[in-house]
Image (cartoon, rainbow, N blue to C red; front, side, top):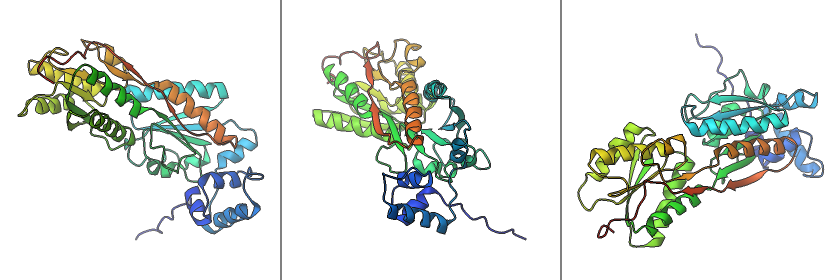
Length: 342
C-alpha cells in the first residue's frame, strides 16, 4: 500500500512569483530588513503569499540573529577537476576572514540537479555558493529561500542573489586575435561536450571573433572533458577530407592535452604544423611539452569574490554581478601558420 504523497515545500521563488516581486525582496521581507527599501504594501503582499504557501524562512538566519556562526554551502560539479579545487581554496580563504564555515559539496549529478545532502539544507545553512551550474539545478538546496551566489554561470538568470564570473568571452577574443595575428585562417574548435553557460559562452565568443575577422573557416567538434575523448575527436577532425586546419582552439587545457597527443599520432608537429591552445591555465598547461598557450583564469579569486558577495547579501546589501579579467599566456604550442597554409 502506498503511503501519502510527499508535498513539495514552498521556496522563496514561489513566494516571489505569487507576490509579484523579486526573490531579493522576499529575502528582505522575511529577514525583517525591508524597512526603507520596500513599501509596507509590498511587504504585506510577501507575508501574505508566504502564509498562503506555507513558506518557512531559512532557520539558519534565525540562528544568526541569536549569535550562532554562519555556514555556507559550496556546490561544485566535481572535485576531479583542478578548476573546482582552486575555487574551493579561494572560497575557504575568504570564509576564514569572515569567520564563516564552508561545507564543500561535490554534486553527484555533475551539473545536473543537486540533491540536498542534509535532511534540509536550509535548516543548517545561511547561503549557497555554486560554481558552473544552472540555478534550477539547485532548487532542492534552497528550500526556505537561501541566498544563492552563482560562479561561472549565466549572469542573466534572475534566480541568483549575485553572480561572479570570469570574462570568458574576452578570453576567447584574446585567443582568436593571437592566432589570427600569427596568420591562421582555418580553425577547429574542440568544444567541451558539457551543456553549461561557460562552455556555450566560449563557443559563441570564438565564432563571433572569427566571423568578425572574415576570411576564416571554423569547424566545431565535441568531446567529453578527458584526454582520451579529446584525442579521438581531434584525430577524426584532422584526418578528414579537405584542407587541414592550422589551429586547434580547445575549451580546456585537458582537451588541449588530448589534441596535442592526437597531432603527434598523426605525425604532425606542434606548433610547426599545427598550433594548439587551451583554456584555464591549470597545472597541466606547463606539464606538457611544448608548454601550452592558454587563457589564465583567476579561479581562486572567483571563490573569494563569491564568498564576499554572499556576505554582502546576508548583511542586507546588493552584490549584483561582476566579471573578473582573464589573461592570455603565450607559450610553446602556438606559432605562425606555415606559408601557403592560410
